[in-house]
Image (tube, rainbow, N blue to C red; front, side, top):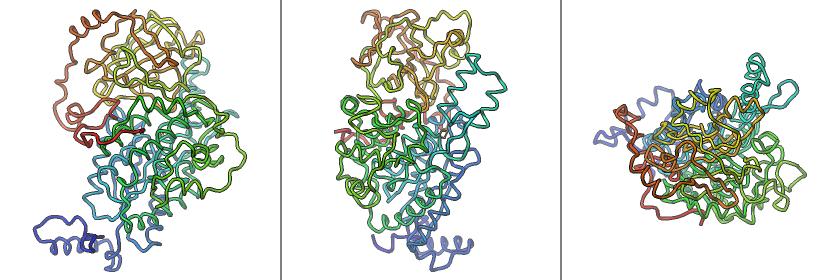
Length: 574
Ligand code: FES
């Protein structure tokens, strides 16, 4: 790259006179006190995702300062800029509805502002996927930093942390086991520090996958948000971003079929969130790569779950970090990884693993020879009810429900669910299969994390803790249960869930990878012919219109079709 296209000379505003554009740019930026020397340096942009609405990103200001320090130590000029920031509990109707918008915002700012490299600060569930999607599309040298997990806290002597315990306490409240005063007290204890959820939910899953795919410096996935190491890691990322700019090591040289396969392998081994698969499909789509669900399922069969972490195990993210974090996981998985993949450090994954400190005794990450769960966390289901991509997290299932046949109890929408699930007259038993439809990408809209359909109150009070549940929406990575997700195409576009009627028999057989509706093909054809699409006359303008017109289904990552890079030129895992 010639000096003409570096630093403050990059991406000049178009006035038809480049020298005038640079002169004007400098005049304005000098109003903030920058010297000629500062403005002549390479520029590292820093995506500042602080928001008063986002507790998972509360430490971003300190992280920005640490990255700036690292950039300046390497002789560069750090420039932070704001982007959309998404928090799970502060995004109506759901954060997933806004993920693609955040990715567009981030990509366009990376391209519009002068920067030779970029450090993206993500954390809460949708932010890291949005930023990786943006990095894949913008393709300027980029390094990811996450805010890191919160610390676990305690309630009446019991260790707790968002958000698996959020759901457990809420279930106890619904079952009448704790009262209103205690559930109120619990809200003071669940989130005991800044940072992302302290279990292997979507945020932690995406952080681990990002490190595995080489877009984050080693060790960055698990450092707790409030540890000093988090800031040292950020400083190093700033310094390394300067080298990335010099080397021209862009995301497309790091993210490819092999490195994405490494991320999928880690997703399975950590028993990670089902959302990790959906987000990876979206990131891959930006690179022209398709996720091969059958190959992913085969990978799952040979990848045991190694970590004993909530929501399926017992430990928290601060325990995983104390157990060595991703170093311990990658060392164990090395025989199954593509070790020749280059990472943002400039070294290959294999070289990074070779450079790891020696292992030590710990109880959170199991060896391959003695896993928590054999045969993979996430399973791809087939059958007349699974469509193109229904999945289930088998490590989160009740063993006695892995093979189950039951009567369908159908809820037509989230509103219908809310109106009837606790009705004492609801015709439901513990052996029934709860079905929620019209809650997918377009149906809800935004494919909310409503797949964790609550156990009907009257059954919860009898002690029922799990039932087979099926939906076309997603589930929080912090939730657990025998729950089929991502049925696609969704019901709102006439997918298989739109054809179920109350009382139909449904069979789930996880070991055989099958999900079927015991209704004849002729009858299903009759129902399909009678199906009418939902009224979308309320969708007239703005982002909502863009979303409804262009969102893809779950198996393609729910990205906007025009943002993906098609036709696909590769498949992962290979
Ligand atoms: Fe932000 Fe859980 S709410 S990571």
